[in-house]
Image (cartoon, rainbow, N blue to C red; front, side, top):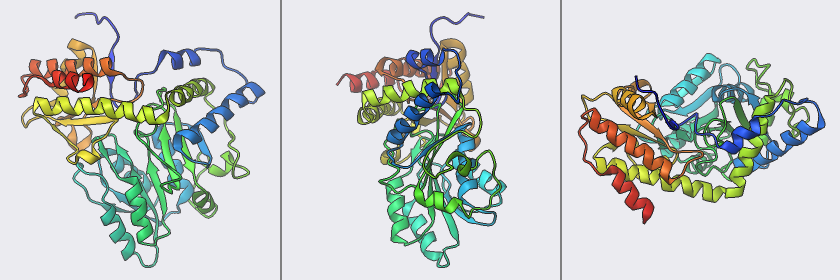
Length: 387
């Protein structure tokens, strides 16, 4: 076997590439997590996260994966037997539904074909039908990581308002946070769910809940069993974030520098960089004659692209070739897209040359696997980025 040389091109939609600055920030001895030095670091992180989420409400930090932050959102806002309205947009909306049902919630699951985002009109219609206001919450995945499809959160908020429904609004921002514009307060999101290993350029291990006042009030009467996930333990006075258990100290070191890097670049510039690199990927896919899972250009994600292969061709074989021959890691198709699609993650610490290298690896993989395509995808991306 050929020994790989050079740096691996990691282009899954999470974990993402970690900047050297963040790696160096974490490469230091631990400290007393109850001492004043760590408290200063933690407070800077809490303040910075409110700027990333665009909220004046507290953002709680759990030592967990994003799934843990999902469970915290549901367990603190709902009671067994409550109805939750969700929209089918892909694998992650499906797994969130499964979690809600495991907690004893009743899920109204609006069907979808995985190629479009949540439909505001369908949500409005279902809420309007609910005259008794039995639906406790609406839960939406902002950016569906499995399909590269973006749901219109602001439009869904307006749909809830038009229905004059009091349901809580829960939004998964795990693969959109710090890469696609998200506005918790402006869009009146009651609970925002996030994770560390994507746009925040950190290892997996931190889960976030942005908690609005309406959700915090609802949590007082919620009856889902919870202990580790209990907001009340993390917000004893309703506003000051604390740690009921030992925090992941070294991840906080990295989180502080990651937030500093994002704010130094400027969030608008971060979003524009992601849009520009995503558009380069889309130009390449179109030039190859391949098809994105996301049909609607307005709903095509700026953090991940899911790309369909022609019938009879195995996306897993393509991924295997790209890894073994070119040291390029691509995301797999999930659930019903397994073997039918591969994913290019283009979020986090990324620039033009990194994305062009990835597209070159994909084009070589397509050729090596005899996948029908037109040459010139990389050139189309170059032409766009150089224009």
